[in-house]
Image (tube, rainbow over all chains, first blue to last red; front, side, top):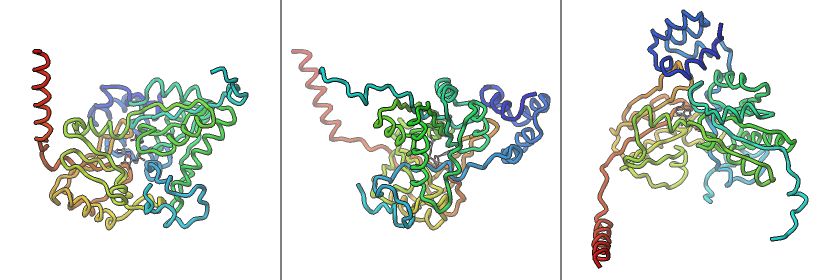
Length: 93
Length: 278
Ligand SMILES: C[S@@+](CC[C@H](N)C(=O)[O-])C[C@H]1O[C@@H](n2cnc3c(N)ncnc32)[C@H](O)[C@@H]1O
């Protein structure tokens, strides 16, 4: 039996599964004996159920933030600078 | 031309760096070449937006090191990014084949991959960026927008507040990282509605307050649907906005013909015709 990550990969790469309705996908996953949390996430259209089961870090906050640099305006290694004043963009290049 | 190759350059160093994109959606977007970079690396560093996607990546390589722990509320993100670059470079310098895996496209609104590649090359190592499907690509598909139709400007939302920029309301406007608009500290993951109100006031110079705004989130898991919310510009400040959402403003005015250029083109066409007959 495939585990949740393998099943997600299979869904992600299949045209029919990726765009199946929640009901169709629920049906298929139940038939394949998918982990309960995956089925629940699909049925309830709530992927946080899956995150909870896999115990994965919720990366959503920081990792989406990779601000393109305003670093050129900042003096190099900044160490214990005051974060509120170190990168103020008041010195345009 | 016959200058002898300096011994330092002569040495082939084995360390190398590839920064690749994983795309947005688990299982759907990873290119065969990006996957091969991951599989053939000695060490893999991961900067992904979804923890489940990170688990998926861990299946592809036995040594996947998450860059996530280097973030901290209250710590400047520039510091975090510098650490990322240093972590990757330390392994490159140690002679390893390093692969940095970033969600979406590694070079789109992302500082450290560009920086790490430039640094690696400057130090004489081989370095390569492999594109991925970005949030922007998904946005065009899910919202049915063609950036070529009216033109399309992209800004980090904060840049609009920090600098004097010229918005062209005849084209699309796409705002990235609006969830933390106005954060000058680079140390917060989120700013409140008062900050977004400033953005609304700025946009009000070019758009009516009733102008439609789209708040968009691409699916990161293949069981998700894209999230698309519509609202009026005036309601943007009060809306809840997550850091991974992107804002789109459709055009607010029609394209205005450039009559002077039309006249000049007309003259050129006439000239072309005369030349052809001569
Ligand atoms: C630092 S940028 C990184 C973009 C990434 N390199 C890419 O190729 O899409 C982070 C911003 O990308 C956008 N973004 C990230 N995840 C997204 C998603 N799932 N849907 C829509 N936009 C997203 C948001 O504007 C977010 O603030």
